[in-house]
Length: 485
Image 1 (spheres, one colour):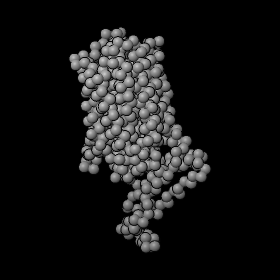
Image 2: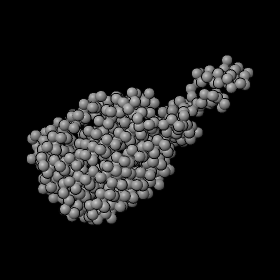
Image 3: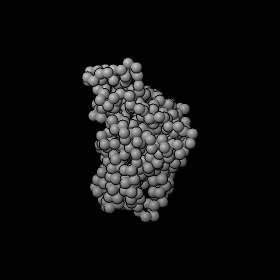
């Protein structure tokens, strides 16, 4: 063993460094060992607790995001809101979400996924209670704006966290079953809003969204931090402890599971070649547009903008359109609009069990194409038939809305750990912009061009999304570390 001879027989720093280089060439680093151990751990109670807890925060995120749509039909008459006022109230949350996505994704890279998600959840819950006491358009606008900071911050951080807990094998299903919690939250919001708003008033929906979130924020702080983030920060002992806990949980669930033997350092502690990553190395937003990541970043941004322009505009406006344009009573309008989220949950359940076979790219392309065709049919033949409007709008939202969930799976996959939350957060900022612009444009076009022009606009945007989706890289079945390289 020449390396050992050098180590034992030489004491100068030059000789030690030479010995370290020889040994490092023959042995895996501790970082590689930790990633290898973590990839081997099957789904167990350790993963389940993290997914359920973070998923509950995502559920409340969805509830708070959509609650306004189911109180707007009441506020329109109560406060004599114009279509422009409605558009601005919807946009307020998305403007806040833009700030939150950028702010909390940066905090998640610097201070960790768990505390950032917990802080974002606390903000959105406190401001949900603030909405209860908002008695005018300006006050509700401000509350929704600040609440949006928490709503926008929680989702990208949670997506990065859940993605980093997933193994390459079956990551699509693991993540999509978590991501289904968001449309389930939207669906529950619709059903609860349909019942409670007519019975107890519009404030009841904000009250329900606020109190549980404050409790959950404290629970979130007790989740284990992402081992991948700890490794990227050079906090290998903490990562080792987290992975060991996950291994012990897996042994309880699967008695035949044999954890991989921990790495035993061969290179001396005095090594000039460090075995850990540089904790100061962190992703900067300009790196997203570097030659390595530019193409995937631009495509991801286009996908987020197109998918959410269509889906969130439909989701936020349909209750009001049914009530004002198609003259349905309040309860029927809310019930018809709530079916869009039921359709999305059903479609996403199918997606969760197919995505690892079909692939992210194929699903996104097909969804955009089908959505564009349904919206075009609405624009040119069915806009005057209420039944067809409900059926086609529900299907279009459910199908295009499935792309939203796939993007939360896909975007964290295409970036390395040092910039995963940042890359996801900035990508979601495009959804916030699109979701702010979309509802405002709908308010303008409904009053001036008519409902048919709105559906034409949605069909065109969905077609652009299909073109962008055709350029996605395929990530199914690949380790996160391999995709990012």
